[in-house]
Length: 389
Image 1 (cartoon, rainbow, N blue to C red):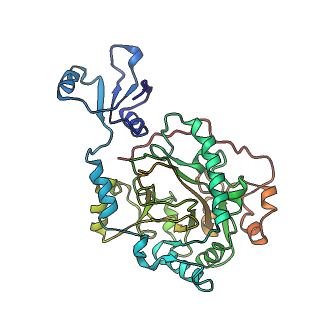
Image 2 (cartoon, rainbow, N blue to C red):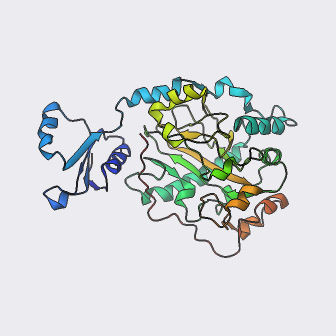
Image 3 (cartoon, rainbow, N blue to C red):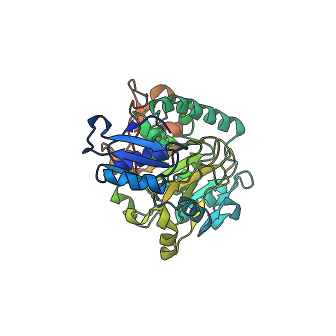
């Protein structure tokens, strides 16, 4: 597929294979290989080996490790199971958690907050104005244009060809960009946040979002966004809420998020979250999966940051952009401030943007307002090879 690249392990080599749409197999040259110049090199192949080639390769046993693009190899069946088994999408209005603010301007916030607290998620249809969605889309596209040259192999930092903008940023957030800062006190979201957190005394910590490049056939394991066990100490108010904005239409094959309702109060068990066993795990717990699709431009997803969720494959021809904003309850902000927790409150919002916020927006960003200059660049090395099969 390309000239060999450097890798540290066979797993990293397979990750690099998954980052290249044309790669079907890989070989990793180990430390004991006779030719020193080839050690720790990763060779990406456009086809699997023939039986004769595989037999020839046995003479390098212990010196070269090879494999197919995905493990297990029945990858298309795994993709199908995530889409079809124990799965609903938004056309089925799962749990009544698809809310249309324009149909019910008075009561939509209470209904949305009820879904959020009860089931851990809610979708608002058409909550962004067209101009807002376009401006946010353009800002996100500009940032991605800056980001991608830093990762020519497309290894990603959240799986192959998949990026967290917040993790790539030196500030952990993107609210130094005006379009993100405007999301802190959005008219469609703030009434729901007030009800979900119980009062106005919550903390807007910033926001980032994620990007899945086109032709990405890998998917994430189910995971949660809060890494601390303290998140289960209280059911209400939730420790943190994330808000994702659809800045373009998202089909069910276009990198949609999948989530598991009602898991925001269930202890997370990483060893049970592999995609190829996910459907069996859900059945054993009596749970269902929701594919958050189709999403139309202007739709918004709110979710409890404890909710089990993951990014799906993007088999389409365009990147899937999903900017977000993030909020913490006061009790969880108190527990994490000053720690290295990725979502701990930090001074990330430039004062000039803080001054443009509403009084409420300024109140909830007291812990994130920055007084001095900020280094708002992306990290120079953003690639973080991870295992997602």
